[in-house]
Image (cartoon, rainbow over all chains, first blue to last red; front, side, top):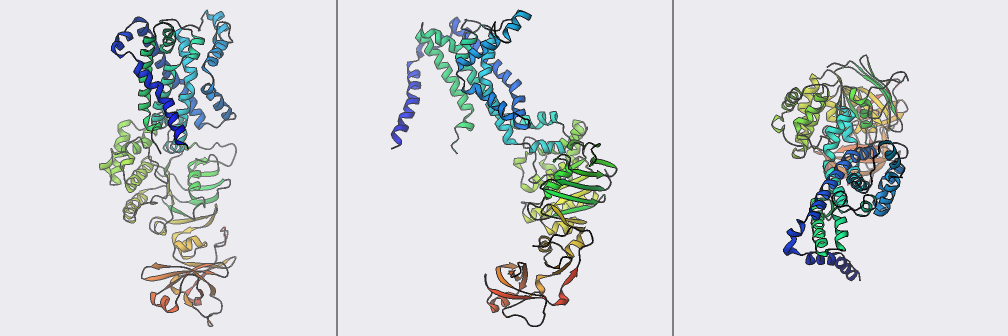
Length: 253
Length: 341
C-alpha cells in the first residue's frame, strides 16, 4: 500500500537529477566553463559564498552563543525572528532588503545622503543578500551543538578559574567545532545556490552581481548547454556538501 | 595552601539547607540517599548556584548573607571540584586538562604543563599524559579528574563520588592514592560518597544529608556507632530504631534472633513482620523484614537456621533482640533529627 507512493517519490526526486547528468554536454564541459562569462560568474560565486560564510561565522557564532547560553526576556521571540528567513520566499527577502537598504530604503536613503554610498547592484549587495538567507542555517546548526554540549563544561572551566571569554575560546568553541563546520557547509551551500533574493536586491550584472545561478537564468534564454554545464557544477558542489555532512544527515539511527 | 576553617550556612531553595563548619585539614564525608542534596551542597559551596547564603574560608568571605558583600565569583574561589562523572574536557589531553587550572591561575604555559605532569605522576598515570579522555579507562579518567582538582592548589577540595562506577579493585587502588593526597592536603575536603568504606578510611567527620537537610554531623566514629538515620545505619551495617523522638536504639543484624512463634522472654525489643528478601552476606544469610510498625530490620542467620525455620520471602516471623546487645543513645542537643524511615 505504501510502497508504490514511496517508489514514486524516489523517482520524482531522482529522475530530474539523472536527466541533468545525462543532458550535460560532457564532451566540451571544460570549454564551456572557460568562457569569460562563466569564469566571471564562477569567481564571483566563489568570492561571495566564502564572504558569506565568513560573515556568518563572525556574527552568527556570537548570536548562537547568546541564544544557547544567555537567559533573557524575549529569547524565544529573537530565535523565531532569526529563523524567519528560513521560510521566507527568497524574492520577498530581496524585496525586504531593498526596502531597508535600497536607495530610498529605511537605511539606504540615509547611507546615500550621508556618505553617497549605494548598496544595491554591487557585489556587497550580493553578499548581504546571501548572508540574509544563509545566516539562519548557520545559527541553527551552531546553536544546536552549543545547546547539546550544555553549560556544564562552562561550570567546569569556571571552577578552574577561567573567565567567560577564556571559556568561550578554550572550551566552548573547540567543543562546538563540528557544529561550526556543519553550519559553514550549510551556509555555503545556501549561498552558492541563492538566486531570488540576489537578483531582486543586487540585480544580474556580469562581473559584479552575476553569480552562477543568475548566469544559469540568463543562459536559459541564450545557450541552454551552458546553463546545463553550470547546473552540473552546482549539483557537484551540493553532492560535496552532502558528503561532508554525511555523518550528520545520512546516518540511519 | 591553607585556607583556614570552612564555615557554611547556605540554602538552595527546594534542594538543600545546611549549616556546618570544618577545620583545615579535615575530610568531611557527605553521606545520604540519592536526591538528598549532596551534589547540590558541593556545587553551592563552589558558587555554581549563585549567592546562597554564608560561606567563609578562614577570614575570606566567599558568600555573604549581608547585602553589602558581593558573592565571590566561581572562578575567584580557590576550589578544586572533581565532578561526578569526571567531566574531563574531551578535546584536551590528560595533561592539558590538568594544566588548564594552573594556566588560568596565572602560571606560564610551560610552568602549567610541568606542574600538570607532576600531578599526573603523583596519581601514577604520568605515562598517560597525552591521551584524550576517551582513550582512558574509568579509573584513569578519575585520576586525571582528581589531579585536575588538586593542581589548582585549592583552599577547599570538593570531591563528588570519586569512586562511583569503578570496579572494586580499581576503586581500592584509587582510594589508596587519594588517601595519601588527602593526608597532605591542608584545606577542608568535602567528599560526597555512597560508600561507608570511604567514610571509614578517608574521612574525619561525616555529614549526613536527608531530604535536603543535615540529619547528623559528627566524627566518623560517632556517626557510625550512633546513626540517626536508617540510611547511615545501613551503611554502618546496623539496625536503628527510634524509640522516642530523642532516643535511638542500634544493634547489629547478627544479634537478632528469628522465630516463628511469639517470643516470651524479652518483652520490649521484639517485632512482628514479613520477610521481604533473603540475600547472601558473607558466610551468613541476611534476611530483611518489614515489620508491622513500618520498620525495615535486618537479621543475619546461618543457612542451617534459615532452612530449619523454612524462611522464605513473604513468611511471617518474630524478631527479638536481647537488651544487653543494643546501644541506646540520644542525638546531641541541637541536631536536626528526622525520624529514620
